[in-house]
Length: 351
Image 1 (tube, helix red, strand yellow):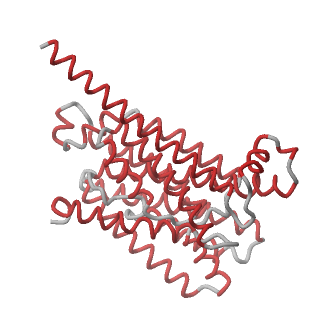
Image 2 (cartoon, rainbow, N blue to C red; image 1 turned 45 degrees about the vertical axis):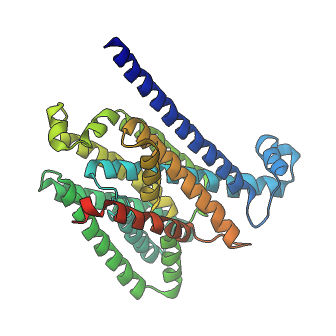
């Protein structure tokens, strides 16, 4: 009996070490992509120039320092922060709704932010430029939070049933996309161009203030989510089994949904609509470590960061001398993951 118990403990420790090694490997991928993101651009920099600008700023030309510290470093950090936020949000949504097709994008949170941004562009057109520009993230954040509140309160009519929340999110997504189209139809050509550019998703608007806000939200919400890792793992066994273990399922869903709603709102209000990161990151993490939320949640954040950072690099390589909107790149990357999820889970979710 003791031998069997020792074997089980040893196997568990070995699996945990392997899972931690996979998280470490994901962090290495993030680091490599982050460095490439700083190196690559309209003005290509060498590795030595980049490290000199980062650690010995006074030894490089002023233009190189400006390129690295003002343009590329905030955007590269924003890619990692937003990717990690969307990966974490996608993993948490999929767990509480028990559906691998759920994400901030498919739930309509991004669509609500897009509608808010479009409103800000139209109504801010008559205001001074600096005021109008500041209204866009404020409106985007407000309407993404409003979308989350609507999903939550509509879900409460059915005791926060997962399928109800998912259907409410899909319905709101269609509603806000239709309202976006209406605003684009009645807007001026200049406003239309600004709306479309924001909806494409871009890291070009990143600055040190927005980067700080993204990482503040991420570093606050990630630990608060990991505290309930055991409860979330139990939730994957089903609501009844989770209740039998003493877990208040409705309260857990409410807490996690509020946390990921705030995190997603912070992420999308600064960079625009970026889809499929919340699908692709958790999908890769689930393949590598399974449903143990202690490893699944952080690895989803890591791979969300890696995918968006890699997409940023690809957007620069594809469009030489310019930067392709990153939302286009993530869409092209995410579609194969989306179809693979549909085909893998059709028996359970698409009956």
